[in-house]
Length: 491
Image 1 (tube, rainbow, N blue to C red):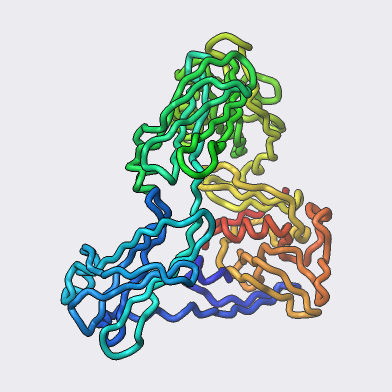
Image 2 (cartoon, rainbow, N blue to C red):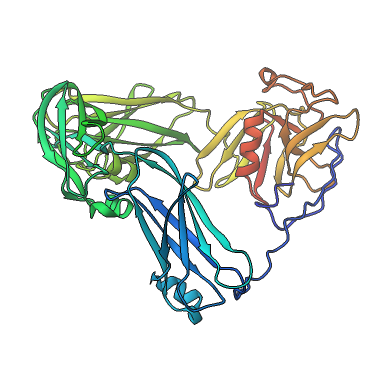
């Protein structure tokens, strides 16, 4: 049976065939959580230390607190590394607290700024009780790494489309100052420019609010053909280091197209090929030519949107994916893809080649199915689109089960043969007619010794069930569905 997360509707299963005698064990899930309840505080203070963060002014310690015994603001004592740091009234505006505790209003926040030396520090806050109960209540503790060194990140260094120039951008801050700082950029070890990191970066502003989001930098520098190293350094203005390296990038400036042939999935007399390609000389899509066993097969335009390509090459956008279904003749073995160059450079570039899996046997049906070629001792897992998601050798029994169309009808995570302590895992049953055939891992004996090696897969070794390599058994277990056709062929 499958784990309780993936399968909810269970069916009883009793399989008896050679060593495929199984029994299901239903595992109950955790009890449902109790319904949420509103708790009205009484007695001791309540609250929370929301944050302790470094800033140019010092570490900001902030949170909220209230005492159910009074409507007045309570005192909060703050400690740093176990030493008393200061007291502050919890009287700041906190609309969220007021919404949760309307009888106490919104003026329950506290905040304290503590100039702190560089290093790792621990801050704790305590609400001081004004009524009965404990004299104080801990609101929480936070560890803060105080660092006065400048910091940042070199996000990208890429070629400018249609040019050999490089576009370089990133962000930088100095925790000792809310003002923008300078960034120095080096190309192949040579200084090529300085920029003030004052561009708007909302992502950085949301994380380091004291910067007001003014942290971005960008510049363009010329570079010739070849492989280049780009490095950026944040220049400090406070008590920390004079500069900090914020990243290096390797950039290849070439006139040849780039890309990769990612997949080649065989189907019924066809192969589905996918990948991406672009020409750094142009943002226009390139042509991709396919060859099967050295013979030209088709040409397509690489203009399918690819979010990952857009993220990696933002200046070129994401419309550089390609996909095509190519006709295959029996015995076809290899498919290759080539990107056709737009500008200067070589006429074409190979994007890769893929060795083709054997196609599903003829007359094995259409659409989603599991094809079991008994005489070949091979399995094909054909997806909803009619193309193979996985194919691999297995070990079953000669012409058993007999040719026909069966259905997946049950699952058992752990199974046993009912004799000699033989067990197997990831059992997928496909014959409800009382014989109980199934796909599973290679069985092991009572001592954990496999009954065959993975090298013996592809040969008859079983008494009826179908043995698989561990990774293939797990894949089938997760891939298959109740009711999937299992087409058994004498081939």
